[in-house]
Amino acid sequence: MTLLSALALTACGKEEANEPEKDAPMTSSEYISFKVSASSPSESAVITWEAVSDRIGVFVSEAGTGSALNDNAYYDAYTSTASSRFFPLRDADKLKWEDGKKYDVSLYYPFTTKMTDATSIPVSVAENQVVSIPLTTTQLKRSQIFVSSVKSVERPDNGILEMSLAPVLAFVKINVSSNLPVACNSIKLSGEDGTALAFKHAKYDLFTSSLSEIDSVSSEINVKPASPVYLCLVLKKVYRY
Image 1 (cartoon, rainbow, N blue to C red):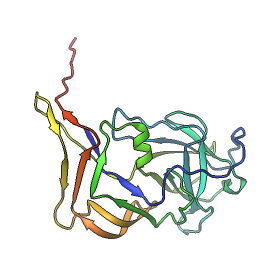
Image 2 (image 1 turned 45 degrees about the horizontal axis):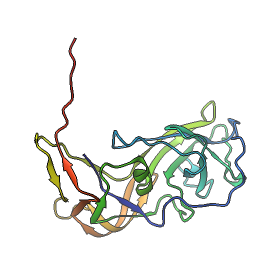
Image 3 (image 1 turned 90 degrees about the horizontal axis):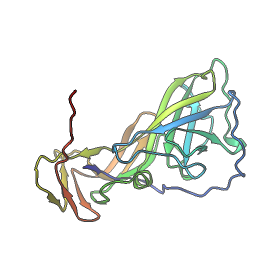
Image 4 (image 1 turned 180 degrees about the horizontal axis):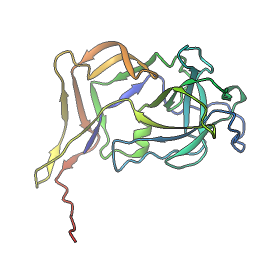
């Protein structure tokens, strides 16, 4: 069983944004575009993108200078696949590669219009959580923030940056050794005193993958299944030839 320690991105979720009708994607290698996949902590919940409705937020700056070249641009998934191209639909979000220049690039999912600073994203982790078990792909995508960043990257030959998003939070996997089903009503995760397992307020930096300004810290997380759960040992057959 994989437990999800839910992280809330303040004012985040799939949002509607006014955009032009979707045309064929830009194919010029002069412009920055992405091929994006996302890693999942669960073998049964493979992350698959949904064309048009799935959007990533994009921050690009000149490497080493912190000079922003865009302001929370949004790129749309072009195919409903596990690895999809993402393109900007608005002219204002299109960025050209410049020869000889290096860039710092950071992506996050899901996109929100309220994101203004890639180095100061408000996040929180609830001390008391109710989770669905098993976790579905849809639930995973809706409840988590996925991120990826690269530094000092130059223009690839085809202009496409391939990046893999990963969840910000940690996941806990529980292995059961009993041959009999075990009822699971709740699970408590505990850390040493002062360990910030849960917190009401914090700022997350997409470029450095670090937390700051952590407030109202708890060293415990209480997790309850949304519906009754029984854990049991899963036996796998091994064939020898």
